[in-house]
Length: 458
Image 1 (cartoon, rainbow, N blue to C red):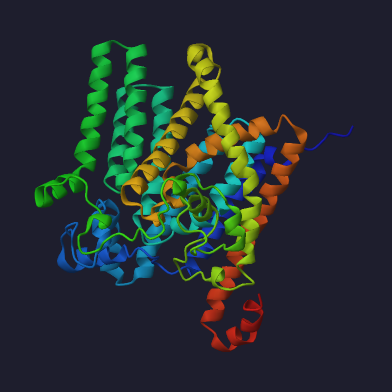
Image 2 (image 1 turned 180 degrees about the horizontal axis):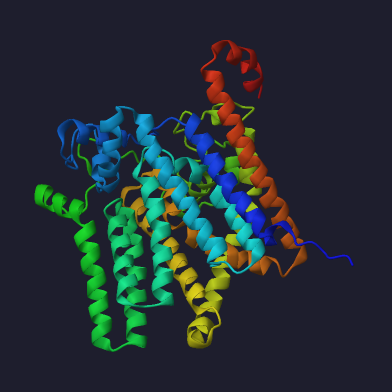
């Protein structure tokens, strides 16, 4: 009797292989990727090791001193013990693999994403999306905050499943640690506070709901407020960043007025996959460009500098239009289904998972809103980078998965999406392979000279 085999995305062994593949890519990328990018976070760690204290926000020539200190405090012993920035990068590698493993658990083992196909596609992205992999491996507080963002959603799921004091305290601690790592973690606080207050109000007495909400805020404040208090004591302002430095005026040359906020002409990226005046000033275009590819040169991965290899970026941008469209379809699907879900919450067969997806999606949207608010204040176009959304990666996957479930209802759309996702995965691996080769060639001048005419051939 012939038994029809399951497709790849419905086989647990294949999702495990993807997870191991994601770990392998991170190990290889760590080997070839230089520890620092355009933001020299290593300088803060060096300051701590040298002076044995935290730098004030307005420390000259140290703009990353604007950030909360947790990542730097945890990373500084690695430098003190080894004297090597590559050793410090090992800490980022550990955070990166831990974040990937937690996302794998949320997506595949806890099954926050119901559709097997959507789980497979989401795992492809968290395992191999170049920008997500690279920004989780630099010496940067991004790598720790990506881990804590996934941990916060995981702990929120545990709290939703069993809303007791212990999971509430653990959730509060994770949120506080996230805020003590990067101020962008503030995006988690309003959705989590609303969750705790509403669940408390509907399931227990009102005084207990208020008490739990205050306990959450109190723990988050105690753990995450150091930088805000320090700024207020030193400078009379709670919030202060590098763009507020009076000695470093913000370059607003690309700002084109309100059109900058609504310009979605991603065709510009096909003509210029690397940052240039043709892509400057279009905030949504920059967000799209920096999410899918290294649009802004920022590391020793220099494939975007050569006409031949930058074609990989062009292909990624073209194919990424399909999952991006499905993502917006998912936003519509989640918004349309929210009233019915809330109405039938108590009778929903999978209420905890579904509510966690809505929570994670709310965090993702809060991150996006904070990006637009910040860029509206400073009009400095590099703010609109996709990496700021990676803190809520599981929320983006949840929105995308809702779109995949809708696309599956129409066979042509499902076929196009399947082809695009598999082709993107191949391009991601080709991108990494090319970058590894270029880093090796850069260390062997004779070999590089032999291939330079090809790389520059256009």
